[in-house]
Image 1 (cartoon, rainbow, N blue to C red):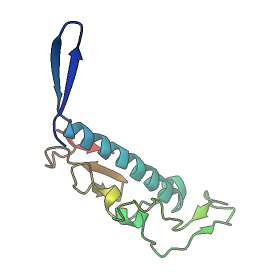
Image 2 (cartoon, helix red, strand yellow; image 1 turned 180 degrees about the horizontal axis):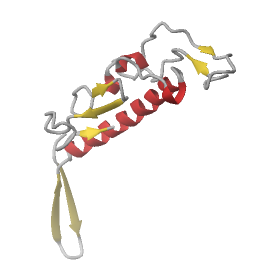
Image 3 (tube, rainbow, N blue to C red; image 1 turned 180 degrees about the vertical axis):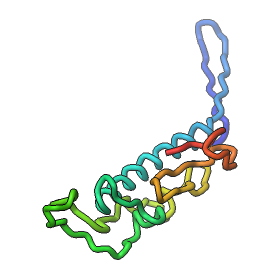
Image 4 (cartoon, one colour; image 1 turned 60 degrees about the vertical axis):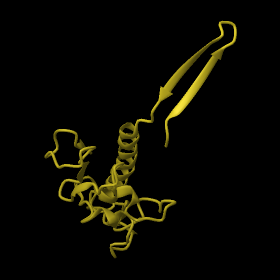
Length: 143
């Protein structure tokens, strides 16, 4: 994207004002990162509910939100379980296939880097604009 130049002519005064506005790519990348993270977080929560409820497990890898893990989806009919009458197993896909038909689309930040993911906690983060792991600090974005 180039620089947008706006010319404003004030005919009564015969003056011209020039305003130059450059796009803010960092803000756009940050916004895209947050939007993707919001979708991934919702999918992780749904996956976890289908795999043991609130104390359930997260997927081994993020692509398990899209790819069938082989555990068939079924209703838990055991009244002794905390998940009684809820769906259990792989009941996905938990994310829609993006228009770009790239299975990793949701799992990359706005700068094109893969999210770092911890399957024991379901936490994930982006290394941010500097694309360097700041151990969750600096410009890293955690979700």
